[in-house]
Length: 441
Image 1 (spheres, rainbow, N blue to C red):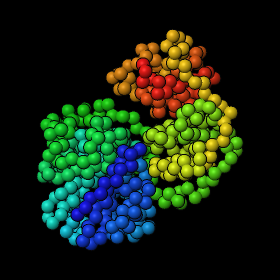
Image 2: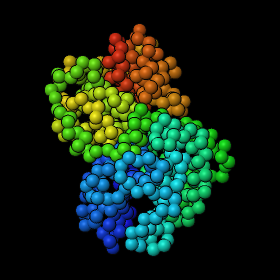
Image 3: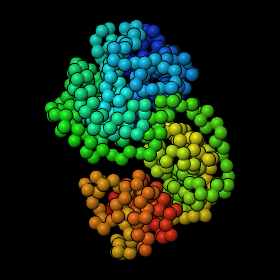
Image 4: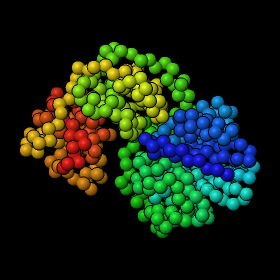
């Protein structure tokens, strides 16, 4: 039994291939929308993908399970509680997939969602690994507040937190200490709050170090779990439903998207400009939001735009535009792309931030801090700043005074580039992006 971990860094997503070398067969767990890495892995090992297992309908990315089924003939397994509308085999507690000397058995582990399962992999009768989806992470456990308004089975966060408490203690902690945990996410995901940088660990190691596995009653656990969870992007409920239905291939999803001249955008529609901030500031189209491709593009696209909100995608060249389109597919937003634009010289420019002048004349600016409230509490920078976290900015612009120029900052420059472009579009006032220079304060 050979276990291969695949990582999608922008989404902090882990997926897995379990290779039975004797049979030249592969079972995938929680695959990404882009199925090419799995096909390449199968080809390199002269193996056939025979099954795909979904631990739950994911909120933060679109899975490629349906395309894999169409291309390889693989069977899809998921909990019956998912309410999946694609062809699948129910896989709940008591069910086992036998693949030669490898057996995969399902555990119902609700908590992150009502329909979450974990999969225990055994080789020659001995438990070797457990694929925990979004139930147990390394250093943390999954958040329980994503399914109040999404999915086949909706559940309140308090109810799910209680389920998580029991799933961890009555299911996963009962496994042998040497069983290796393979989660669906690593540090940087919004599906938890305190994940380790490690991609895997053993049950025994996590019993010692993971806060969620320490002795406490269910009330203390629930309070700790629900405290300081990160924001919920707007696309999360939408992706749950896309995954329950099954998504088309990336090629099919982008089939109708055309590259158009930059001057032909429809009035009122947003342009998502994926270029570096410095290029954006020297010239961009009206109604442009600067969400850079070099970063967590998918997360911020799905946080700043609601599902069904039409937009154009702009990049500096054909290759970058294709990358932007494919990464848009990873959150299922390709139906909302009005067209692709290869950089055209824009008439709008953004004033450049002068650090020396700002230091001497801070009173001449309204400072806007778009970090989240926990960041501001832990590391205050400007005491007089207006704090509106970036995910809330479009709905709270009216709270920002427009009587002075704005100086916008985050922690490192990525979010402030997006925020300053949004504010520039919405307000009749000069907007300065402090950008990476915030590190000097």
